[in-house]
Length: 313
Image (cartoon, rainbow, N blue to C red):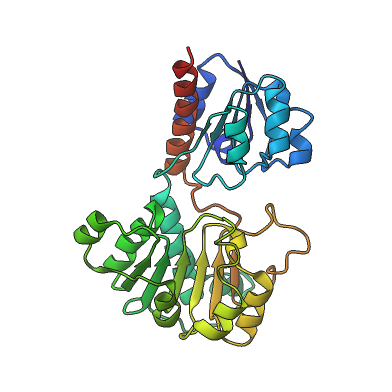
């Protein structure tokens, strides 16, 4: 069985997930993703299975794969927006992912970004390293209102953490999880995302990228609907935010800051418009990259593959 492994988190982090994969007797090749369609097309037919990150599995790639050996696609991580699921179904390639394993790491990363920005940690660090003792005045987050758009596993974990830190928590999702809300009654569920735009001091995005969510944060939202000059945090997908409108909103003080772990194009392009802009912090998609989370996700991805193999034998 020939397996292609493209997720860099899996490759770069030693642990039980690697032990599990390499103990199976598979012939494993590695590439450092995300891999583009043009790079996959010449090779995809050579593999029975792929444990992938955010590679481009278009219909053309999947079709080419099934003309050869390809039988299984196993996503390391949650988001499936880079895999053409309709094409996978059409060509009978089962697709798995790893839900509800990275919420602790990602929610902690949201808080790390928020504390860094509000207490000027990034500015103070660089200042001290240059020999300066300039001191900025920061802000507390206790008493502020956070609006969480998307109450999936990460959104719920963030709601619990921010509530414990003394923030007022508003949550919006298309699905109202009554069981969660009854258990954590300090989280206020709002029926419209407009309420978050109007009332939140901090807005955190936890949605998949779909045609409906693309540029959810757009010019109209930034200039007409945001009422409190909020901090915007994005650890979900870069395409949720219109970058050009965002930069204009920062310059016009419609948004206080943009803290993001994701970009529309990854890895970052040389001409990335968000790079170097004041009041923007960018981290290189590391929200779930902790030793604990990588081992959980990696083990689940391998076990997903093993379960697919067993189900067909």
